[in-house]
Length: 177
Image (cartoon, rainbow, N blue to C red; front, side, top):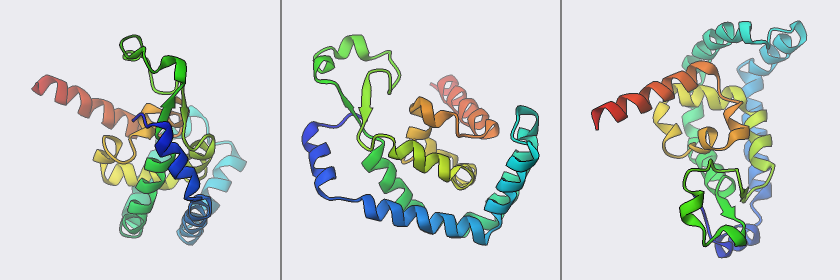
């Protein structure tokens, strides 16, 4: 989603940074309460973060989905608000008139995100929680959390099974039309 410079100015004038840091703090507490942080630390210490360990992570993600689904649903409006405020993109002023040439490009090729690096930092810090949310409601990748798919740096954070499910759903929709 591309936004105007006026909206960017309004978002910065609201100074929502403290709200986003509180949201991150709350999500960290949830991770600690559910034991996700400790499991994540063990995985990184034992070196299971490679490609072969992704199947194990998917199973852990499914367990996480069941235990956190209700609690995470309460945070979903705040998380979606974060994505709306920080994942919107602005085009450089020289590319505003060149809509026809920019249609095939990925968001992020020649755009700047409103939140800058804040989006990538948030997604990286809350990787397990975001993957659990998307597993629970895959429609989020087409709506509020679509930046996870459209922003190249965020795409890396999604687990393989989440990407596969999203891709299959897209193909299914294309076949129906």
